[in-house]
Image (cartoon, rainbow, N blue to C red; front, side, top):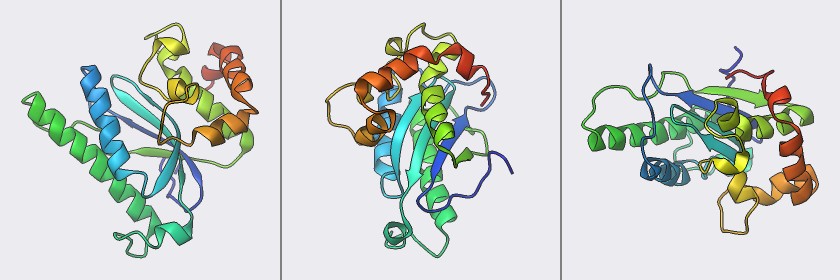
Length: 197
């Protein structure tokens, strides 16, 4: 089913989740930072991350699952790669929700039941997905420029600061930092209007 593809080894996926109802997932900069700290705790053991964007009420990540020879050595692996990756995602979302609920004296679910994952199988899809994820704050009217949103990987890709992201791979994919920036600048509304997550 589209959006509920099984995770396979060594593959690219666009991963999306959303807050329940009209809730927000993030209220302060501290919330965004805490979520990324939990992401850094749970996800690197099962995937590398090319890019991300955290929006007030939803999240986007573009990941590449690790190869079979890596995942098979994972201490929680029990013969099913999809379940292993989904368990780490579930642990991430649950850990954040638990901390969020405690901080804001809130009860109940924070995330929708199903984390969507779209397998990326073509070069053009991969390029478009990276751009789409970064353009999300512009699309939703939170900023008019990519630089105006601090909760995406666009800033990390264009800096020299230490990062857990696969920054070199992303920049190389576009042919260099100048080409990376130019592609994002030249492919804004016309491209992202075709997408809806």
